[in-house]
Every structure is written in C-alpha cells, then in structure tokens.
Image (cartoon, rainbow, N blue to C red; front, side, top):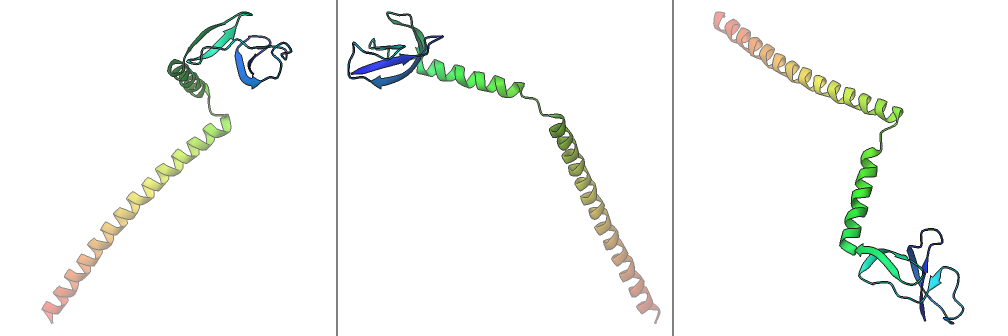
Length: 124
C-alpha cells in the first residue's frame, strides 16, 4: 500500500513509500494521497493543502537559484585575480599593437633599403 511521508516540522511532502499495514504507519506518514499535479504541498493532519503546479514551482526554484547566484560576491582573492587577468589582457593588447608597429617599421626600412639599392645601381 502507498503511504506519503512529510517532514516533522513544516509538514511538506517528502516521499512516497510502500507500507504493509496501513494501521501501523511510520511517524509523519499518511495514506491520504496528495494532488499529483502539484508540488510543495503541506499536510495539515487530515488533507494536503497548498502547493502549486509543477511549472510554477520550477519557475520559482529557477528564480530563487538566480537570485542566490546574483548575491554571491567573489572573494577578495578572486577579485584580485580578476584584476590581474584584466591587466594581463591589456598588456597582451599592448604587445600586439607594438608588434604591428614593429612590422610596419620593418616594411618601411625594407622599402628604403630597396630604394637605396636601386639608386646605387642607377649611379653605376
């Protein structure tokens, strides 16, 4: 036979279990079936009350998790690490810009050397 366990303090549904004798139920257990279309129901001693449909319950759980994650602040060490990572990224950008400038200067030097070589050939 099916029975339904609820928590001792708040009386919310915990689990569905099988029992042999409906007259000898474990503590905080009833044979009164909760509404299968609802979550988060509470047993008042004679019937299951409250609850919400599964979609609403899942939305509230997701909203609660999102709120908790938004409240999590990085530790001082994590903040320092993020600053250092930002500094490294900025340094990498600077190095790349300098490499691009160096490449441009090398091209200019090669052009000038080619011009000088051509001038020398023309004078000979």
